[in-house]
Length: 101
Image 1: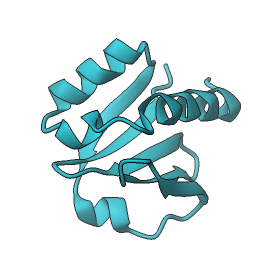
Image 2: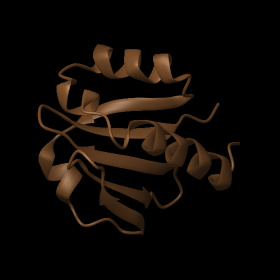
Image 3: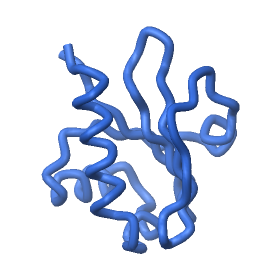
Image 4: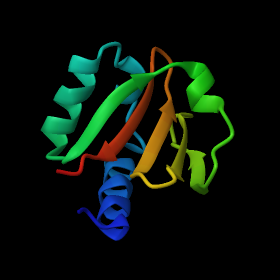
């Protein structure tokens, strides 16, 4: 089982690597997102999510903010589930997390 601390570190590293880049706003498909994760050497899993889900009030909000390029993000803890990073980008909205075995 992946610890919340490891997941948090992986999410923070992804945010740090991409905070000033516009590449996230250029992503339009799950394949492009998975390619970006691979290029970053990230172990995060990804999904594209509807705007309604990305804006729904979370049960447990851990942190939130905006990147230097204006992308809104938040990390939330799913009850009984993983720590998730959600981002609202120009073309798609995404969720990233560490997939447990």
